[in-house]
Length: 114
Length: 110
Image (cartoon, rainbow over all chains, first blue to last red; front, side, top):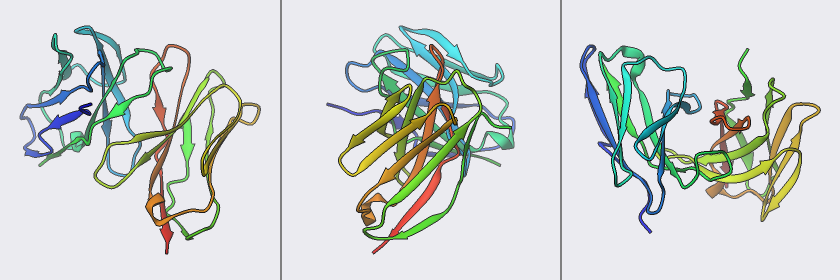
């Protein structure tokens, strides 16, 4: 069974640039959620994708957008990067959209914005 | 005030001690309560899952939920150096996504 994989693991961008982060969900999981974890903080929900549609969004501006593909992999795109976007971005997959299913997290993509 | 409060620590205890980790919350609508463990440079992994009130035990780990006090706990018995990690509480209302605490950094000293 393949776990959740994310790429890239680390990247550095400058303010105003755009970034795309990628996630391959665990085999058999059709739901992908993205979280932002700032240093010393807990993960904050960005959005969830189920069957290629956004299924819930947290308190993040529209410059955070995403996609889910037919194979359930997903992308997180962030436009017009700000310094405060520096964080660990976690992808989690599950086989349910509600809270009765366990979330399986990847190791994250660490983004630094200079 | 945050919906979920968790003491960030750090917390250091000797090997073999009982560890108590806690979170408080303000929203009485929370129904799902979880504890995640996060090792350094890794993603969180689910440790314990409880729906509504009560206790749940799994090996050396016990999770307690007291909805009347809006307080949840995780106990680790016979703590091991491999238990050294950040422990995140998480909770959710019906049909809503998880809200995490800030995490407590735990170190078990051999």
